[in-house]
Image (cartoon, rainbow, N blue to C red; front, side):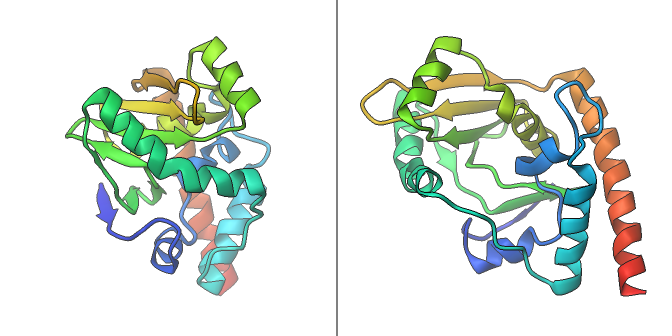
Length: 197
């Protein structure tokens, strides 16, 4: 794995992940049951286009998403305090043509994914007390890209307890994910080369 040192959200970070399949979008490549996603082709075309124009496409951000970004540092500090772990912030991690932007790496073996949802969602997550299914591919993708042994998923909302769930690689899904990513990257390369013609 190669770590591209940059601050997430900056132009340097955007350039590092331009045209690269990223863990936060692995749900567009593979479903929860290990099958190709129906969003696969559209995501591939987006990445091929990014490679041609040399920059990432602007994405929609709403108030709740912006609030989540602003609260991430607060959540990271609370996690460090509660767990005793020191979190290393990194830019973009790349391996085998695909990548991930972890919210942190922990020691030699761990990683961190932080979400700061709406209050109602936080209560729902706390009652379920497990990794929310909508982040399964992302967290498993982070584990695959970085080669880490575990990943802590943190869901945070001020004044209510955080959800912290430790996730380990799910072997059967990781195998399917690796295959789908290899196929996706090969096809993405072919499409990009055809466009450059």
